[in-house]
Image (cartoon, rainbow, N blue to C red; front, side, top):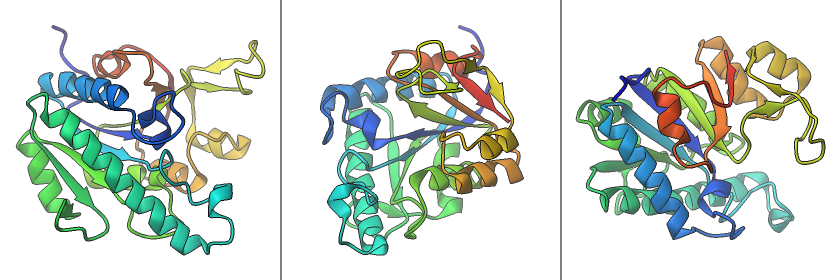
Length: 237
């Protein structure tokens, strides 16, 4: 078995991924498959942290949130991420690996509050840690939370799990001849307005020199391939 390229990773998994092809809610077979891949990464002795989104349950900027103030809808979205985190936790632990869920909102009956030193200790004890509730603040996306937690956990790489196999000049679903980028610089992502993550998350990664790979997580085995050093998706650095 080849040695992993990274010792500690943080992977951002959106709610859109967790709902599979259902379009809404938590799709158990999809969550189980993702859990299996995270367990494979764990078996490679790679310390693993996960940030989950909540768009499969509630998206603050959606039409359904019209009429609500932004702060209230964002807090509802944070609670949705907690549901996803617990679903992923159950799926991983069914496969025999210890996990901890930490939330930026205090929900002590079901999860630990986010404490950086405690989170680092969990990683050192080879537990998979799942971060929920974003940063705990409205107006900040879970992408920004992922960038922030990657820095706080001193991760070697931030992995952005998507349904597309990288970054393209144009939407590949609309233009099949669109060029795929193998590598990009953060400043180019900002200047070109490429919607990989929001600009706050991109700027945070750029300022702290955190490399990012965006890749297609719907293709089984891609997480492990990246960990082993295969060039998949698009590297932003």
